[in-house]
Amino acid sequence: MTGNNNQLECGIWDRSGSCLIPLDLIEQLPCYLRKTIPPDYLDLMGHMNIRWYFDLFARSGRDFFGSHGLNKDYFRKGEFGVFTLKQYIQYFAEVRVGHTVAIHTRLTGRSDKRFHFIQFMINETTRQLSATFEALITHADLNIRRAAPMPDYIAKKFDATLSRDQKREWETPLCGAMRL
Image (cartoon, one colour):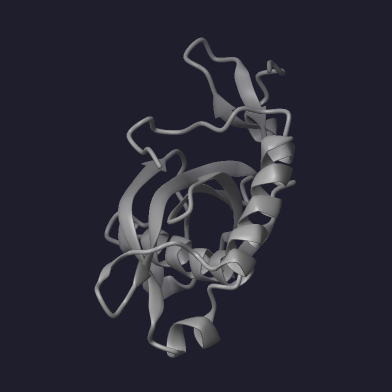
């Protein structure tokens, strides 16, 4: 996919400077978190500290999980949970105090025990993609502390999301280091 080189309309660029994924296509993904950045998120460079990127991605991820049945009630039973196996963050543009960010999520794959997704942090104030967070998660039996298949009703929810996300007209920019 190509587009014009207007920085405020592009989310992901290729090496030659052409737009691979326009920002408006990323914004069509479900948004699981929106936050205006408070002063206590600041670091010594005057922008959001890296720990808060991870925190915001984690909070958004919990809502993404919950929308598929992996919610507080499911985890409180104490039988099953999830473990993060791999994660990868890329930073593209700084986020500053007072900026509002939105995190949109795309599911990229699923097996009987695992799911792979990417989140896009869009700085809605500057109209730029600020960061991406890619993760590989495994469903786990907490009694034996090992990977375990997801229940059918959860797997079906992930399958519906995966089917929708696979129909998108743009290729997901993955790091290449994660396999189901």
